[in-house]
Amino acid sequence: MSTTATTTITQAEPIHITAESILRLFPDIDTSSAELDGHDEEQIRLMDEVCIVLDENDKPIGNFSKKICHLMTNIDKGLLHRAFSVFLFNSKNELLIQQRATEKITFPDMWTNTCCSHPLGIPGEGVLS
Image 1 (spheres, one colour):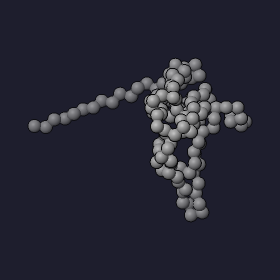
Image 2 (cartoon, rainbow, N blue to C red):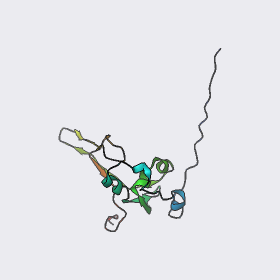
Image 3 (tube, rainbow, N blue to C red):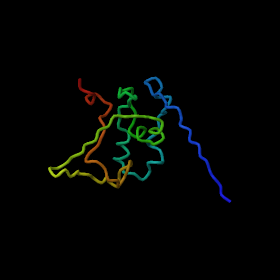
Image 4 (cartoon, rainbow, N blue to C red):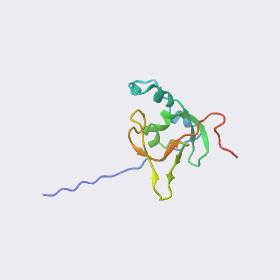
């Protein structure tokens, strides 16, 4: 006897994130919560850094903490934030990569690009005209 299983995947409607809807869609989360217990104090502090939140057209629409921007539940809902990556190659076309520190809250011990970070949502770190 043979059986056949069928799976139906339904894709959710994309969420339109605007300056008006952002706070409703992504409520603030306490970075002093128990989920950060045991992490390095400096790494916990860095999760409070202010990232620039973007709409789907790369237009800044607000600011959220790094923790909120990096939560997979928010990323899965379409929350975008400004970040940059550096890929450094030598004359032999070899890429310099780094292994993230064990103490990192996000992606500890993972091998990654040469350098990455976020421009902060503070005066002096905006886009130049």
